[in-house]
Each structure stands twice: as structure tokens, then as C-alpha cells.
Image (cartoon, rainbow, N blue to C red):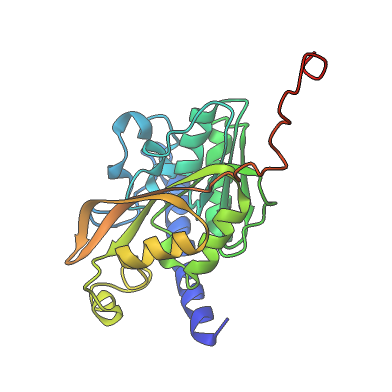
Length: 270
């Protein structure tokens, strides 16, 4: 990794550590009224979740939300599935996912920020969520084995990565054949240059690092994903959009060797 990439990653980590500390300190000092929300505009944060979803969770989980959408609403999670949230932050999407997959399923969160991991684990304990696990790691090197996850979600985090092709490859690696992604992310109009994206906001603000629609689609396809759908949901800046991204890791097609032998008579079919 280049020095510039290391610097960008540390800038992102420090910003999210500051956000986690702000929420944690607010909750400790003001338990009667709940934690204050991290200040973001109306295009980001817990306001993008249904009130019914927010009300299920500890206040500190929603207060720490910095996402641009609600990936659990589009991931179509089912009972018993294993779901992974990339860049899990204060744990809002992990906790909502855990409720959807039920006690026979499991929800994992991966985050590189110690402060966010501590906040998420505290929120899981408050929510009595037994089927969750938060892991320290980066989304470019997910600390889970191959073919171990049914659904990958993420909320406005992949655009922060300094190596998005590695993220796409890691998603494909950990997903089981037939597994799927349901992601919220910031994506740029194809006409915008990298310089124009940077002019619309800093890297930590989710804007400068965003891929274009064409780049996002090409990156997922290069990692082996199919059935790629990218749908803009709302504008976050001029030419920049929050979008829902769906795709599938295809299951291998049966080969000729895998096909059953043709029946040749009554004895072989008995």
C-alpha cells in the first residue's frame, strides 16, 4: 500500500474513532436522555431507517450511524442466514440483521476502528443479541473463511476504501456460491472526473472516493458477480447519489461428469 493510501485509511479511521468516542461519551454523561447523534446532513445517518427499526435498538447504535441508506431493508434476509456487514460501525445494521435472520442465523460485523468495535459490542449486549459477532479487520482483507457467508451488506463504507477491487474480490471469496450482496453506497455520475468528485466533498465525507456507476458495475463483474443491479435512491451532492447495489455470486453449473448416468434398463434403475 502506498503512503498516500495509508494516510487516507488513517484519516478515515481517526474520523470514525472520533464519532464513536463522541457517542460513547454522550451516553455516559447523559444516560437519561440518550446519546447525541453524530452530526451529518439529512442524506446520511439514522434518519434513513424506519422509525420501527430504530426503536428496536439501543440509542447509541442509531446515534453512531453514518450510512447513506438502509441495506437491511433491501438485502431480503431470511431465517437462518449468515450475514456480514462491512464497516459495521456502531452496529446498527448488524443488530437489525440479527433480528431478521433469527436465532438459527448469525450476523457478523467487520470494522477497523477499535472505538467503533467497543461501541458495537456494548450495543449488542444492551440489545441482548446473542447471534452477533464483531471482528476487527479491514474490508480489503476480511477475517472470515471462504464460502462462509450467505449475504454481504454494507452502508456507505466501500466508497471509503482505498482498494475497491480488493473489497469486491473479498466479498466474492467469503460468499457461498449463490450468495448475494445488498449494499448502500455513494456512487458518482459517469460524467464526473475524479477531480470533480473530490471537489464535492472530502474522502471521509464519502464523496471523493466514490466510483462511477460504470466503474462500480465493472468492478463487481471483474470479481465474478452477476445479476448486478445499481439503483440511485437520492442525491447527496451534485452528480453524486446514494444507491442500492445488488449482485449475486453465481453457483457453479454442473458439468457433464456431474450429470446422472442415463437409465439403460430395469436393472440399473431399480
